[in-house]
Image 1: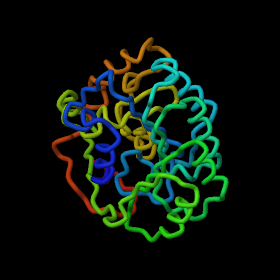
Image 2: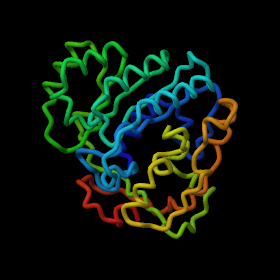
Image 3: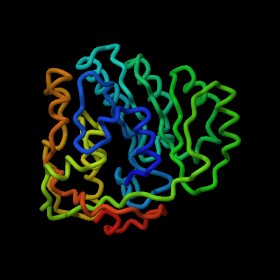
Image 4: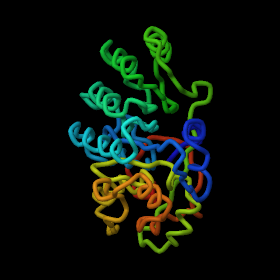
Length: 284
């Protein structure tokens, strides 16, 4: 489930061709991808499209992450200006988040890099965290929820270290979209892809594969938690070590994937934000 405010941020940092129906990605755009730094979360939003509320605790393997973004640099060019969002789950739960920052900047020197957090852990971050953000030019995006956070302490640290902070303090996120899944997989995949706000706009890089959206990358958490009979085709993601060029990636991203037949796009509806009760109905 993606909030309206997150969609607005995507419009501001990602080309509009990502967001509208049928996200035809163009080769002259800066390629955007997300990385799930931590699988689990400390807030657990209802119907999370990363399924973090039902995911077991898990962190990105630093060696795998470095390997994967090095491959992205090989495919697109070492100085390619990627747009990278380090997220989760809650990325600040990662015990080596500062090393994630360092790897990102070392391998992708021209990337626009964001860490996307719910903000809960920011006031307690040590000086080394803020210094790492500064040294590696990591922008901080607070995904706003109706929870109490010491924003004054965050503002103080941001100002002290001269960092870029994006949040929506004046209007906390209170509405999400219930992204309805058809567990029988009877939807028209092409229709779902062409009318989905996530498809080809929320690329996820995960363990050697690129996915058109967060649902495709992380739906295994839903399958495992509820023991569902969902087909997890190898073709839901692009193996970045089996393609030969960035053009090949872009061409593949412009097409629906097998999992699209599980997304009942026409049935999506807005819901008020709350903490997940870990019920299957949150995704169906």
